[in-house]
Length: 419
Image (cartoon, rainbow, N blue to C red):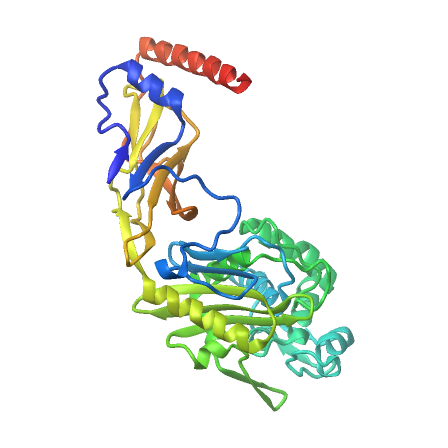
């Protein structure tokens, strides 16, 4: 491991600290071989197949490791497409969040309106729970119907029960919650993904949403792995083909519309590793099933977890302004882990990014930035980092020197911007 960082806080001179701050606010660590690789603003397909990479037919796809969020493969992952019934994950999250907050209860009952019955029930000809017109159904049963049976009527009933009407649920509750979760591109026009130009999501944001659901609501997540549900004396099987074809598969959601094509959000656990796959835009259901399965199998076969930094291990240093030390040690309370290819061909770059210098006094455990880890050209992991020690205020002379240093740096940056 080659390290482009000062080896200790006791640098040779104040000038060295000044120029380190002058050159960059981000500190870089190169793990393995290769020079610094900047984050790509577009999706890449990764290594060639003969080098251990994956080649698939899905127009848009992503594969991530659930615990760290490490991206193993992506292809057009930020392209907005119709999510079809995969959008029901957002409806489910809104409901689960409301349950967790105590705003609603599983025993609450919502009426199946004529709108829900006609647009999403038996007369609609779409995936349905077959809830009876004007019947009252508990939130618990509606969640089962929405997740296991992909019931459009169940989603509409939840939306109307929680927000008064489906439009308000989509425009206000779904959109607001999506932004809170960092889903910045997703837009919603209804609760179920039925065709509408306003329904758009990327596979990256679908994967991020799936990861959040499974980590935040582990007990409720078990619903996604249930293989059947009976309502109104009608037994229906879960539409997810992975549940019966792949070891360890336990979720999450399929989808299809003419506009979006066939898509799937899938997940499985093998040997203690959970992967999440999202594909969209395929031409038939068989391609969807085989593509998702192949990608998961490729991930399990070719990747393993590596710990880059142990918990509380010093990762680097941040420049301090006005302190009794010129820098402060940074670490993570949790191990920083990344998925890497077993063949050892990956280039890993870890970079500390923070707004500095950090003003003294500084308390231990203060978040000052993040450590970003690139695997080849993709960001694989982004983890918060914290101060590992206390730094007190420096002397009047120390603060004055730091003030002059920052003035010089500011002038240098302003001049550089004009070049």
